[in-house]
Each structure stands twice: as structure tokens, then as C-alpha cells.
Amino acid sequence: MDYFLINGGSRLKGTLSVNGSKNAALPIIAAAILTEGETILRGVPDLEDVKHLIHLMEQLGVRVHRDETGALHLKVQDEMNCSAEYDLVRKMRASVCVMGPLLAKRRQAQVSLPGGCNIGDRPIDLHLQGFKSLGATVDLVSGDIHVRAKRLKGSEVFLGGPFGSTVLGTANVMMSATLAEGTTVIEMAACEPEIVDLANYLNACGAQVVGQGTPRITIHGVKELHGCDYTVIPDRIEAGTFMIASAITNGDVTLKNCRLDHLLAVVDRLRAVGVTVERSGEDVQVASTRRLEPITVTTQPFPGFPTDLQAQMMALLCLADGNSIITEKIFPDRFVHVAELNRMGAQLRKEGHVVIVEGVRRLVGAPVMASDLRASAALVLAGLIAKGQTKVARVYHIDRGYYHIEERLNAVGADIRRLQE
Ligand code: EPU
Image (cartoon, rainbow, N blue to C red):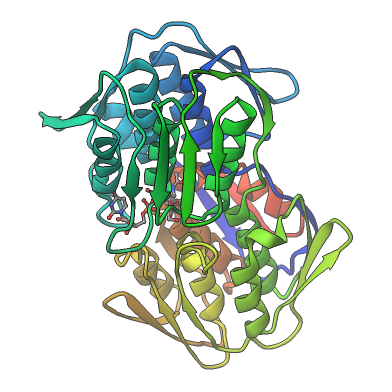
């Protein structure tokens, strides 16, 4: 198993390019099930989660290959198989996003019900409620969800839950409604840029989706979708992680392929901390040369501060000059990094879904364990600034969502080695 050995203390300086978005790419890859003809997807990062989904797509009869330019080609060849088994869904929860396309195109889907994961309980009741509203029947058989419909009929679907809207739930219902008879209106739809990207992809394939990016998405069903050539948006979470990497090392990093309009809440909080974030032509420059101010951060659905950057922001605030408060409103248990950061000398106190961060003068290197993708990113960031050496075990978690993060951070001055246990 790989681990990282990080020598802390280097100041990051230079240019980093942000890859295509994992969380935009995953549902778009699944949406290819809906289409006739070939989809060419550009900018899809070569990550473990993407590889898992490609494997599942192949099991579902979709031919997938990457060409020499890195573009992914997808074409449905066989529509017989409609099931995603536990082994794959267990490895990657986002596999549930094949459910909507299978239901719409093949009239049924059998997908293992995902269990909880390290960021907490992750029900899919809202996805299923959406399918039912479109006329599907839903049964739970031996841990598998079976959804079926002779035909799907457009309807009004409300997708609000106790923690707000659902991103993959909105994706699933939107995808299934593209081929339904009549019009579907999703109320309290997720407004995340990844949902807008999926809608734009579907429209490029001939779908009629309007309102993406707002809480009301309207989908006029069409008879069929064709293939298209599409480029996924840059990964806002990777960009935010690199911004915080620059800030935590008192660095000066320029980001290429960075959509600042997807990161307004993050930029707002970084500026409140005292970090400079500025456009520089097409690029974004992130620099920090001064002490860090303590702040409050509350995670919220887009356009609020993303839960996927909460752990990384916590690493930064460990070094602020005073007490910060972080409130997690999307996944109230998403705090596996708290105990690990405390091992590095942080002073964090968790009270329910709130963490009080008492700023310390420095973090110290220690052996720590990654147990979730974004938590691991936070530990790497903490390692960059910690005094001495930090060993981050189980980096396969970070490989799920960041392509060769160590090589990219090393290119701007970090000192991270990937070694094997
Ligand atoms: N929820 C329900 N019922 C549902 C679905 C969700 O109660 O049927 C709750 C969840 O338990 C959570 C909240 O609603 O409290 C939001 O969950 P959501 O469904 O939006 O999460 P998701 O779609 O499963 C995606 C990202 C996550 C990201 C969340 C929130 C992908 C593949 N995953 O998950 O990304 O944290 O949205 O923005 O797009 C990551 O990349 O590290 C990651 C975990």
C-alpha cells in the first residue's frame, strides 16, 4: 500500500493546472447509457473513481476507450445488463448514478444499495422518491434496489431533504426524465456546477433541459439522445485544494484552468483569512505573506462553501491567529480528519456538527492515516507546513480524487515522496 512521506516547510511557488472535474465527469459518463452514437468526453481525469465507473460501464455493455489525446470515447453496444453489483458500488458510491440512465433507456435497473461511508450515512431515498414520481416501481431485494417502469411519465418532483438538495439525486432524476413522456419539473434541485455541466452535456446530445443552476430544473422529454463531443468543467474542489495549499505554505501559486465563478464562497473565506486571490488574465493567483485571521466557515449547498473543502480549510485554520468555528451542514459526521490533525499538534474540539479550531503556532509532523478522500487532502496540506516529517498512510483515498497530487505539488516546491509499505 502506498504512503506519502512529506518534509514540511517549503513555500509553494509556481503554476499549477487544474484538471477536469471528477464529480462532473462521473454522472456524464453514466449518461452515455442514454445515447445512441458515440460520446467523446474531453478533460476526464484519469482517477481511480473514474476507472471504477468505466469498469461498470463496460459491464453494462458500453465500449469505452481513451484515445492518445486523453479523450474518452463511449458507445453503447449491448443493452442486456441492467445491474451494478455490490462489489463495485461498495468501492465507489457514485456508481448509483447509472440508475437513472438505465431506468430511462432500458426500463429497469438493479443497483446494490450503497452502505454508509467514512463521511457518514448516505441514503438514496430522494433518488428513489424521484423515480417513483416518474412512475417507476422501487423494491429492495437482498440489499439491491430494483427500479422498473414500462414507461416514465414527466411529473413534478421535489428533491429537498433534511440537508438540502441532493447532487447525485438531481443528476439521476434529470437523466431519467430526459427520455420520459412529457415534462418533468424538479423543485429544490441541486444548483452545483456539476449539475449544470451534466445538463449542458445532455442538451448537447439533444435533450431539452432548462433551468440548470437554479433550484427549478425543467426537462421536456425527447424520444432519443445522440452522441456528442463535450469537455467537462475544471474541478473546483481540486482548484480550492491548490488554493489552500498555496495559502497554508505562505506561497504564491498561479492556477490555470480555474473557474473562479465556481469558487466564490471559497474565495470569500480565503480573503477573510487574509489570503490574496486575484485574477491574472485567464489565470488565478493565490498568495499569502501575512498572518492568518481566524474565521467562521459553514458548509452549504452551492453557491455556499463546499463540504468537499471543509477538511482542507480546517487544516489552514489550525494555523490562524485565534479561534475559528467550522460548521458542517451537509454531512454532519464528516470529521475523520479531526483526530488525525490533532495528532499533528492541532487544537480541534468537535461538538456535534461544529468544530472549534484553536489556532496554534505550528503543526508538527506525525504518522497519520487517510480514511476519506478530502480528509487525506487535508492531511497532505497539513504535512506541507508541519515541522519535520509527516507520513500519510493509505493514500489510495487521495488517488480517488486527485491525479498524482504529489508530483504536481512537488513541481511548485513541495517535498512529498510516494513510497510503498
Ligand atoms: N441525502 C439524503 N437523501 C438522499 C441523498 C442525499 O438525505 O437521497 C443527504 C445526504 O446524506 C447529505 C446531503 O443529502 O447529507 C447531500 O448529499 P448529496 O446527495 O448531495 O451527495 P452526493 O450527491 O452523494 C456529491 C459528491 C460528494 C459531495 C456531495 C455534496 C459526487 C460523486 N459526489 O455526493 O463528493 O460531497 O455531492 O456536495 O458528485 C467528494 O468528491 O469527496 C464527495 C464526497
